[in-house]
Structure formats: structure tokens, C-alpha cells
Image (cartoon, rainbow over the protein chains, first blue to last red):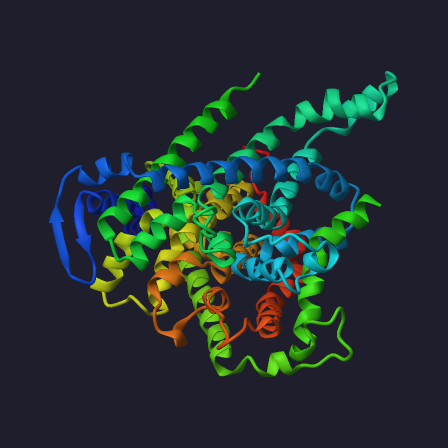
Amino acid sequence: MKPARQAALMAAPAVAVLAAVAVLPVLGAVWLSLHRSIVVLHEQRFIGLSNFRFLLSDGRFWSASGTTAYFTAVAVAAELALGLPVALLLQRGGGLLRAAVLLPWAIPTAVSARMWAWLFNADYGLLHRLAPGIDWLGSPRTALHAAILVDVWKTTPFVALILLAGLQAIPQDVIKAARVDGAGPTRVFASITLPLLKPAILLALLFRALDAFRVFDAIYVLTEGGPANATETLSIYAYKTLMRSGDFGYGSMLSVATFACVLLLGLGLLRVLGRRP
Amino acid sequence: MRRAAILAFFLGPLAWQALTSLWPEAELTRPLPHALTLASYAGLGATFARAVLNSLLVAAGTTVLCLAAGAPAAFAIARLELRGRSLLLGGALAISMFPPIATVSPLFLMLRAAGLRDSLPGLVLPYATFALPLTLWLLTSSFRELPEELYRAARVDGCTPWQAFARVFLPLSWPALATCAILVFIFSWNELLYALSFISTPSRRTIPVAIALFAGEHVEPWGQIAAASVVATAPLALLILLFQRRIAAGLTAGAVKE
């Protein structure tokens, strides 16, 4: 058998699986979004762009988009700000510290959200015991920030590990040379470490932003989108429309809209990432 | 000082949860327990044990599927003349960034048509959307790190490309295969949205679904939830203690180089 043919055969199963579980379903979601489709009634009727027109005038969709964007921006900013000091500490070594920060990253988000729900508990939670008076999950103003805190706790370790890999790739000679030339630690960090770390920072930003935008687990477990839809993100709204209301037509429209937002966000960030000095 | 603050932030909540799991249910309103008990663990019962088993089966099934389909493909990308290899790698990366909600409705209908909805094999296939891209990227970069002469030497000695993969490259790549298996296992163990959407029979729930839907008759059973959390975390804590260097390296593989 020709090597090129054998190569194609070896790649075929993986290509087939990816096509069946990812490419085909995305096209299927677009197709479903053009239909009125109520799954329990086995009703399916082509309605063209009606769902899309409804989407544009759906206040709940715009509010969920705003909530998702706010969640993504604040969570990712906090994770980068906290990830850098953690990475600098990890660079000084210590397997114990690395194991300690890997644990929050590794445990299921549903588990960590339930754990934080107990910490946030308005009657007996640890946060209530330490600083009473705030109903973290019960008030629309604090609930989204509580969800952001859970996301920061869980994913800062991932940011820190990417930044650590970036720090370890910086040649020590450059830093030593700057020290010899009389630069203090702050100057070295600002003028050498930080600029050389920029690619790693942008990469962490890209991965985290795309991941935060699809947030589902933490919010579903903490508040299910409440109180008063204050924490309802796009994934939560789409999930409720699909699985609670059984409306597969408009639910798929919301799924496709979420997908389009992630795609635009990704392409936008890639343009910034690709622009190297 | 900073080190202590960071350790407290990341480990404090886990320690409080572990303490809650040993706290007698009737004493939860007190500032601290008078005595510790294993009652919450005993109260978890057969339903949660079933969820642990289901999660093990789904995570193991996903790991096997992704290594079996991913390793030959990664070898073809890394060492053979595969047409469209950058398209495959780029496409896999894009797929791993998909929001899972985007594929829930068509996958639900496809799995129902195939008779796989509400079954554990019906979760393994969707889990390939995040696990297979990871496998392809990790294994492609590890096959590329092995010297190219190795492949040529195997071919000169009469190996077909498949034999060069199965007899030479695969045995030499076991550390990368292990890293990959650990990461795929962790990601599958943790998945919630697909499991919540496709599984309706309570005895087929995985751990994240069981914990998300954990409810008592009257009040939230915080002690039992805490005990279930500890059980769900224990295997991951063990993996981290044994393989933390490997996990950290796998997570950031290629992050700096490419």
C-alpha cells in the first residue's frame, strides 16, 4: 500500500469522529434554527428566518449577552491579575504549591460550585460566619460576582501554569545582563520580564476568554440563572429553552448565536495575538 | 506571606468542605462541631456509588476511544505524508473551542435516532468533541519530538508506516500517552452539560450531574453534598499527587513554543 494512502487510513477514524460529533452537529444546529421544532410534540416545520427576527427583538437574549460579556471580561481580568503573582511564586519552586493550585483546576466545576454555594450560604456559610450581612447568591447585585469568584478560584491555576511556562522560556542571561547593568528588580520585571511574557499572557487571555464566554456549569449549580435572571448567561438561556421548554427551534437559534459570538471573539483576539512587534 | 495567602485562597474552601463532610448534620448551625462523624459518607448510599461507577466507565471509555482514534491520526500528521494535516490540526483546535451548548440540540436528536440517548456509550461519543482535539495536539507534538531518523531507519528495515507506528513510535511515546490519558480522564470526569442534557434515568447519572441535582426532601443536605464532593475529588487528588509534573506539562504543551 502507498504510504500516502496508509496515512489517510490512519487519520480516517479521528476525522470521522470529529465530523460526526462536532462538524455535523454545528451544521445541524443552524438547520434546526430555521425551524419551529417542539421535541415532545414531534412537530417540525420550516419557518426560515423567523427565529432570527425574534432573536433580534428578544430582550432576554440581549440581557444574557450583556451578562455573559460582563462575566467574561471581569473573570478573565481577575484571573490574569491573580495568575501572574501565582506564576512568579511557582517559578521559585515547590511541588507542594503546584499540587495545591492544580487541585481547584482538576475538580469538577459542578463540585466546586456546590462547595462555594455552601460557603455562600446565607445562614450558616463560612463567608456568613466571617462577615455576616451579605446574601451572596440571593441578591441580583452580588450573585454574578459570586459566580465570577468561583470561576477565578477554579481557573486561575490554569492561567498561572501558562504564565509559568512563559516565564521559564525567558533566557536567564538577559535578566542577568540587565542586573549587571544596574537595573533593580522592579525595572527588570517591567522592562524585560513583562514584555517577553506578552505572548504567554495573550495566549492565556485567548484560551480563558473563549472558555469563560461559554460558562454554564458554575452558574447552573449556583443560581440556575437567578435571582431574577441576573446571572443568566447565553449558555444557560439556551439550555433552558432547549431542555426545559423543549423548544428545539428557538433554542438552537440561541445556541447558534452563542457559537457565533465565540467565533467572533476568537477571531478578534487572534488578530490581536497575531500582531507581533 | 504571599505564599500563605495563595495557599489559603486555593485550599481553604476545600478544607472547609472536608470539615463539613465530617460535621454532624444536627450541629451544622454551631460555629464548630463538637465531634466528627462519618455519617454523611454512610448516608450517600447506592445511588451515589452508581454515579461514581458511571463516571469511571464514561471517563475510561472516552480515554480508550480517543487514544485508539487519536494516536494513529497524530502519527500520520507528525510523520507521514498526510494531505490536509494543518487543516486537521487547526480544525481540531477550533472544535475544542466550540461552546458545547452549540451542539446539544442536534446531538440529542442524533443520539435519540441511534438509540443511544440516556445511555453511557451515548456520552462517550460527544465527549470526543473536547477529548479528541486534545489527544491529537499532545500526541502530534510528542511524535514530532522523536528523531525523524527513527522513522527512516524503521522503513529501511522493512517496516510499513503502520508497523513503524505500532512497533517503534508507540512504545517510545508511553509518557505522552499517559499524560494524554490522565488529562482526557479528568476532563471527562468533570463534564456536566452533555450528561445533564442526554441522561434522564437517575441510575445512569455521572458524578457532576448527581452533585448538581443533589437535593434533600426538606432542607439541603450540606453534609452529604460535602461528603459526595470529597469522594468526587479524591481520585483527582491522587492523580495530581502522583503525576502533577506531567499534568502541568501536558496542560501547557506547545503553549510557549507555537
